[in-house]
Image (cartoon, rainbow, N blue to C red; front, side, top):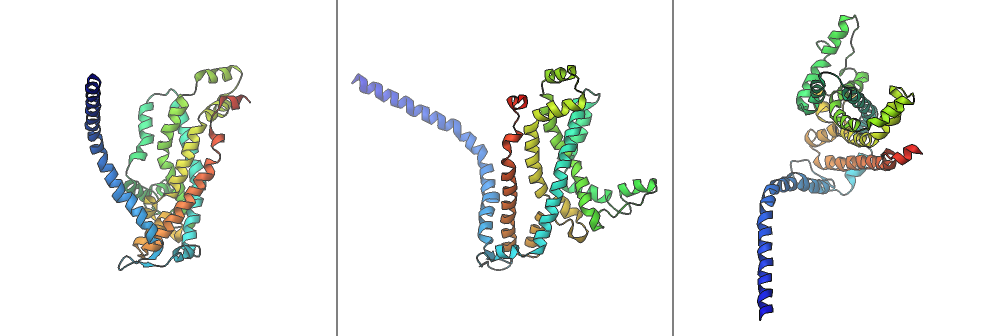
Length: 310
């Protein structure tokens, strides 16, 4: 009987503990629930619907008609789609490495002991938190061929500025110049990593006669290699996701027609929702393929002291 009573008491204690745990967890679920609900309604459900719509002809007004793989077949014969893809790839090839180099250079300068560093860091990072629409409006004024900031400055020294967004040859360079505006976000990640480089390594290299640039290439860059890798991936994804600037600024000769803008126009300008959904999934596969190729070189980007010694 004593054993039975003891078991009963132990079971009661276990049950009480379970009830307490449930009470402790319930507030957490309550706070997380809005995020899950919004993710389900505004991300997961639209994504699943887009899979279905990609196999249909849906002109928004009216019922969608199932057409199988016809949308995907049409994409491979669509010159506008491939033009937007080429524009995006050209932009990514130049803007990503240029942006990485600019943010890394600024991070090196910021890592030195200079007066007013906190102010400079704030100024460089500020563009990363400014609204994309506001940035687009500012740059539209900067690139204005008649009253823009750049052309007015060039006129002061007797140079006639180009039509930045009105000349097809200058549209893509304009967007590349504009991309440097957001280099501050990458600068912070580099700055944190650079400050973690052991000073002993720099001191030892300096004693052996290595100048500043040799120390950067032989010590700093290998040490922050993983951050370079991270910013490379995020830069590629960000370049392919370019939309706000292209939507606001545009560009002559379809040279500002990035792939996301092409998808948007197809869906909401030409009302081909099914075709736009198919384009979105092709776009996803392209970005995923490029990212996987970059992932293949993960070992190269991993810093290893043993590898450096070899």
